Length: 377
Image 1: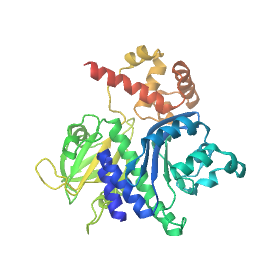
Image 2 (image 1 turned 180 degrees about the horizontal axis):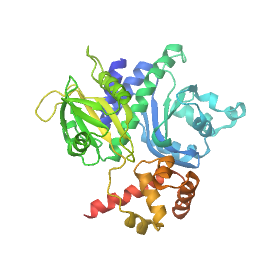
Image 3 (image 1 turned 180 degrees about the vertical axis):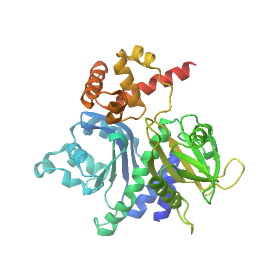
Image 4 (image 1 turned 90 degrees about the vertical axis):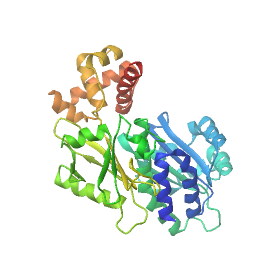
């Protein structure tokens, strides 16, 4: 069953229409009534952006309950601040997120959770990319056995794969490549795509990935094999490739890592995921794995245009662009000759001008200017 669930996740990451079947498998394996997966950014209940929220009961999505919860209950749900503070990957029961008094008085706990069949479920919070968080909620058990050790253990085994699913899915969303086939991904101009055969040999690469491989900076094609430039990172990459292409068959596992390049270029985010059993490459050869290469520096950021569009000073424009390219505050400080305090001061000024509160919001705002320019020709 575990391998079937992993296979379902790998299918669903490229095609949202396959998630219901995967969700149903998870319910069957955990012997629960349903589950909910959410992906959001924000550090408080009042400061949150929800990118993904899906409530399923044995493979059937319940839109009405989703809307009811977020419209009526979420703003006053007492467990949310505690969920945000939970340690990464801790599995806790729903009741433990309420005080003794709240268990008697909470409208969410006493009205909504029984109706939605989540009052006796378990919750997990996981760290996501760029300060985001991933929430997994499993509904009530279908029997009277409660949350036995084997059920909790099974969920813990799945957690890294939930996280990986969300990370790769978000990379595809950002690249406007969700629901693209393996062959269709080769035409994407926002994300590097490398196709590997069952032996891990490079079959094909799109233009974005070709530039990375051709420059021998970060990743390279060495006699048909994909390698990372730094020895330590190459060891990790080969482990990821081996996990995606298990020697003795079975379900492969996906994984991600950062790959360093020459300064001042930011690191590449590399996602390795097994291909579906029926997936083939451009020449009809059976596909073994896909490697997605996300270069945060990709994008035609014009400093003057960014400054004019956002009303920023030249210094603010440069810092905003560097953030959009994936640079950290420390990297920006080193690259511009400013102190970290000065860089943070400029970022705060930009926040104030546009009502922002997080670096991810600023980076998205700058990237949107590139999108508008591309659409306008």
